[in-house]
Image 1 (cartoon, chains in turn blue, red):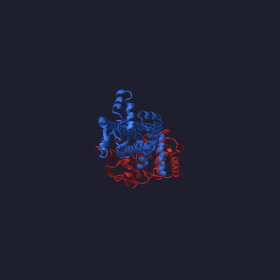
Image 2: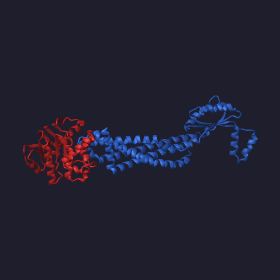
Image 3: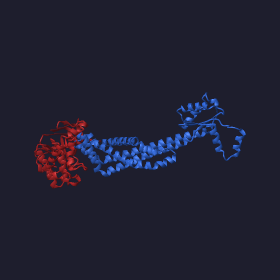
Image 4: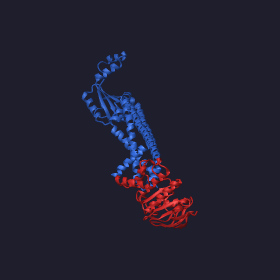
Length: 302
Length: 226
């Protein structure tokens, strides 16, 4: 207990008595945390942009005129039960007609053709949205279900198939590229931390050697530096959180309106802050502790 | 107490710092190890506090066999020795009190006892008033006295002083030597590594002379003869 207290006290003494070195180390760690946070925002933006485009894509299945409501509802219920399906909405023949009229209100020729046909030429329609663009082929197969296959007159997916395939490819590449960039910056961050900690340890190399020469055990020498590494990380996390939280609150409305999504930045850095900052702290503290231990090992061999 | 038997130390690729050195130092002796620069004096001192291992031979100090000592046992050996260096080797970010107390803190001794012992030792080296100063705020002589206080804090049976006066002026040199003599009078074995002729001649104690890594003379009440 006495030893633990001495180790913690010694760590704080190191921190304050080498205040410039401590501040330099903390500022590098703050920048690293901010880089991580910016990467998270970029990842969020990429996903929001992709989801935004994907949410605009749907397929519609037009039922033959005269198909009864129960059949359409049963088909909708079947589709809703699929995990690939996000949403199914039913468009009644009247709504379809109204929509057609609104769409072509400025084209009297088309509107006149409706009179030629007489009555409502539209049947029920199902508008189906998938959870991901990759799911549309599966949904299309589901529309071939024997119980309602013959009642469907037309599926408009084939018109968009090329576009959807392309979109799926772009989404995949954007996410892959985002992950690669994230990985590269994470690696840079780790290298920065490793070198910062190495420099901080290098500055103390003579002290470490002296402690060893006067009979201190490796653990008693190492422990205050490890505790100090945790103090650096914790302080850097607090400073970076104090920067990123207000910024995310301020930018959230802009982000939400630009990507037409609910409050994602605020959700990430405010509502999920214990998880986000907890994981960041755990990762950074681990890197700092390991690099301190490795850097010290060299100077402890006296 | 200290016994070296046919000890050689060869640094790579083939630099022989010590060659076939044998000696025996009895408890309570004050022994000067002298020789010109590069004759192996410091290597010999380093063997005594296990900073180096012999390439060949046996080094026994206070019951420890340095040639066989494990890395984990080295701190325990060093707690039974006091070591004083030419460049003081004080912890720059710790006060005088903290420098002396550090060795006791590392073995988990309680704060009250540390305070008592450190105050006592600082009085012996006449630095009681400097307890809260940092090493950079002290003169060279004062820093060396802090280093001696630190070496005494464990009440060691042996003190190894490697050129303790090398960076000091004449007045401070005599102060340090008198301090080491006083420590020896209390019964502590003192091994003084030096190339200072005046000190050796002033002490009139046992003198071991090294040349080219070998002992060329070992005299009771010896003088500096190089």
